[in-house]
Length: 251
Image (cartoon, rainbow, N blue to C red):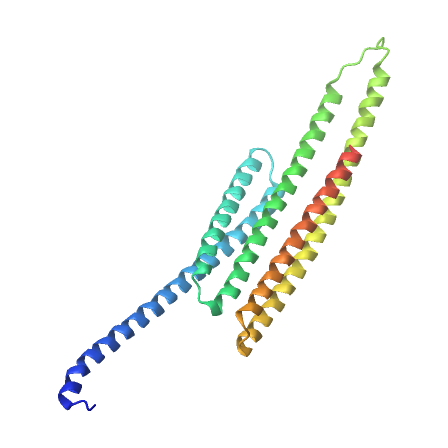
């Protein structure tokens, strides 16, 4: 079958129109991906900036006194809630990223989540230290304001009991501080190991993309990452459980 020149001249505008529509579609898709990338980068840097502000506020909280303590605590908690909200939005944006960039983007968002958890734990530690100081101050004030009479037979017994109780509390507080320091050290070590594993995973993913490995292998790698996270959280839970048992024993 031969196609006449008339038929070709008739089909040319149609083909050109279809090609132009396809080109416009590709342009729109690329534009959407670019806008998505810009939005995600902006939100990521904004969240990272809030994390730095919280770190500075924690230093202020450690030195704050009186009513300023509650003001700084409220500001820190508001910023932590903001970071959590941003991480949830970033999770949704990560799922819209191209496959080639999705693994790296997810790794960055996971790091933000870890930093947020670390900041929350640091604020709780500072709050515990403040509660401890306030409790010691109340006990000291109660001891100094207690009145004793010369004829009271149980005066020395009550004082000895109060002193022993105060000594036990101080020992418990010191033991708790030591455990918190040890736990913080362990968490820091786990964080360094997590960063190392994430870096190794990124290199493996890059090599996998270059070699064209199958999606099955990529899913196995992501599954191993999830297992590592489970091991991390189980270790943190066991550490907290041991701290609770030791504290209960000391008290």
